[in-house]
Image (tube, rainbow, N blue to C red; front, side, top):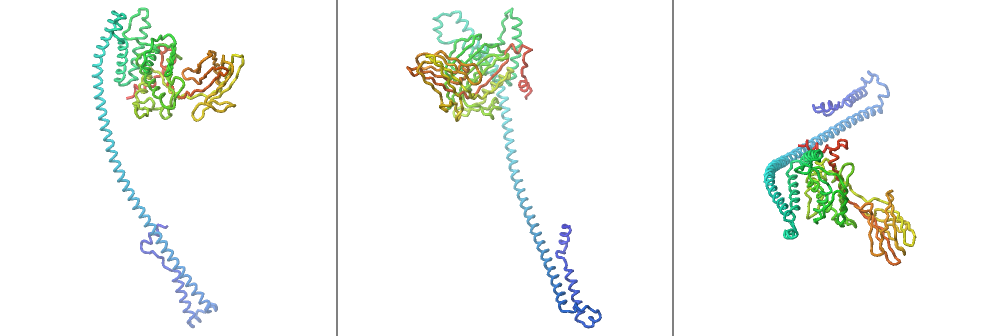
Length: 532
């Protein structure tokens, strides 16, 4: 209805005609004419009250009132039309403003589209150029590999001939004349270099190592079947992981190490690296691949263990090897900062590095090689952030005079540091006791229910330190005994072991051949094979 009214107003009737006031005015004129004319008055016989002057004033007042109402109605209509016109003008201005904004947006988006087209075209050119360079370098790598095979054979033949000549003319004088040159060490280094080049030129490391594992598995089965004939194979399909770990340890220490017997346990603790190797089954493949894996993990551990603020009173790096459930379990621990949660999903990606040092920026290759080698072995790798456990320790101290002392200590964290807490002394860095009689025996029990640690090898002189023998890789506490005349002091200090541990599990040769063993995970290998 409002639309129809507006249309009617636009057709030429903007103001309503005052019909009521006009009709009433005509009626008043006729009435006054009848009242003032005696002939009409006598003819129409009007009532007496209409002839009075008050009735005449009332009719005029009603006429004026209706006229005022019409005037008010006209003004209100005029005001409403003006408001409507103003509203329409505001709508028109708003439409013009929106139109201008749309024009500005269209212009801006057009500029952005042009910039995006230029950016995409530049990136496409870069990718095309990268692909061309990649193909070019692949051709170069193939040529280098071909020439490297020839050079490798020449150097290997020369070293082998040198070893045969040295064995034939071996004597103390000739060995001294040749100095420290060792052809066998040079030959081992040459084989390690060749395996590194072999991996670096492979298009898919996981697939390359997986194919090698299949070949070694076939040769290993052949060796087991023909063990009575003792026929020598061109390459050994299996190797002891202790020897590979020993070689990797020697490379990061840059110091010669004695020969290692893979059948006996081994311990090493030089204050920088703690190593513990237990007897373990053989692994298939090439020994140098495991050497490369452990070398990268150990160098990564050395980098983070050297960060300021993470000093320790024990070897900050630990390398352990043992066998569990048919897997060779390798663990590399380093004292240092934890791996952030946001870095864990990308830790093994190519080119991703968490190293942020002014003079050294990581290239993101070490852990990538580690992960690819583990997947090629069809093994598993895990990263654990190590925290110091909260324990309640009970020390039973036996003195030479037969007296027994029972002390309780609880470890707590204060401002990110491990501290001792006792009811009597509160929180302190360490807890000490002094006795007039020497200490002969200490039995230390942890609140986690583990077996008590007994220490009874105390000397009468000199400061003596004892670290937690239940956790030699990262001891939870240090006990210091300083005997003096009539003042034998015993000091207990909890050690901060916060750091990171990489755990690698690789199936041994026997587990791979045991069809009744646990299923080997191949999802990651299949994903890499199917990936373009």
